[in-house]
Length: 193
Image 1 (cartoon, rainbow, N blue to C red):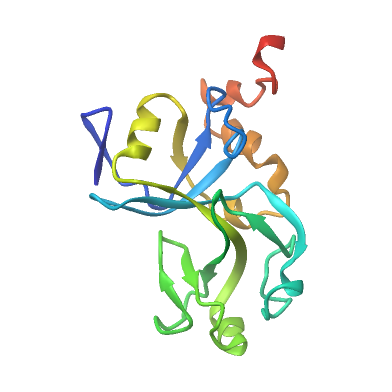
Image 2 (cartoon, one colour; image 1 turned 90 degrees about the vertical axis):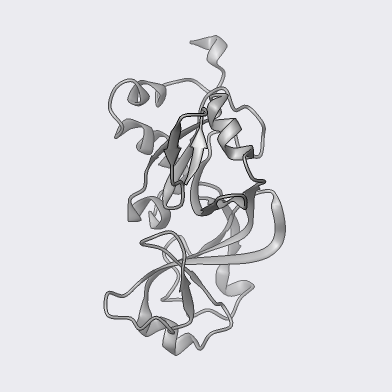
């Protein structure tokens, strides 16, 4: 548990970070990030969910084509270590704990891409592969939230594995209700509003 704004404790693993209109930095403008790890003193790690790349996963990794959720492309997971592949999956309900993945932010697991593809096909229902990740030092993400850069909202499985990632920012905001739902209509250039 970490403290945000000095008084509210929140566990961010498993939550979504939705960039507010104040966050105009190109790597994070209108992004939705799934927080995979967040801990006392260790910072946070997540992946950007709405930046698909034009490179098929099958072109760069030996992963069964039926295992990767459509669109079966790599995603730009964030500006840190873009040469690193991070695979996030949704395990089958009866999958054993030693099935080629490790628990991450429930209900998600981090998948070992070197694991037996047959084992993964039996134990992982959905999979998405990210090139790079977003990372924050201890206290950094909490400070950004306190400054109004991120909305913290609940995650749904279709957020990570949906077939229309380009519309995710608006869709996540719309389902939040007032006043966040109104932010979904904010133009790319707020001065035009």
